[in-house]
Image (cartoon, rainbow, N blue to C red; front, side, top):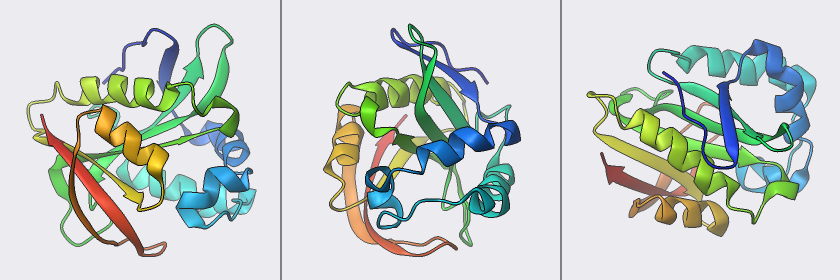
Amino acid sequence: MEVADSPRLSFAPITDQDAELLFELDQDPEVMRYINGGHMTTMEEVHEVFIPRLNAYRNPVKGWGLWKVTVKDEQRYVGWILVRPMDFFGEQPQWNDIELGWRFKRDSWGKGYATEAARAVCDAIATQDEVQKISAVAMEDNLASIGVMKKLGMRYLKTDIHKDPLGDMNAVFYSMDV
């Protein structure tokens, strides 16, 4: 699968060779605030936890994985969009309900990049016959991510525990039919 460029952004699959970009993004406590309370990821965690998790759900044909987001005019990496089945690491992955997630550098916040990037990836994912829903999860206080979800047309489903092997968290769940 490919993701077409948006007006300001281009997209490419993140690979194991992008460990430095993943590390760089996670060095801002504000970026990590709604992910793990502000803990900055070590390079060891990138290699031993983050990349193996990514490789577990990566599927280039279906577009699952992380999509590197670059500002075209500057050729500057600003973040990524996650694509994988909902509950992928749970007992019953939702193969027809695709989770979108995002993480962006703080200096790119407030410019609409997350919404623009998520919309471009969402449009590409939605063309697949087996995809019935696109969903997203965020901590309750993460109003910026919730705003992106709403701008994409997602609707609030519930507030519940988001289960993950790296740690469960109280979260809001949003979704939309494709």
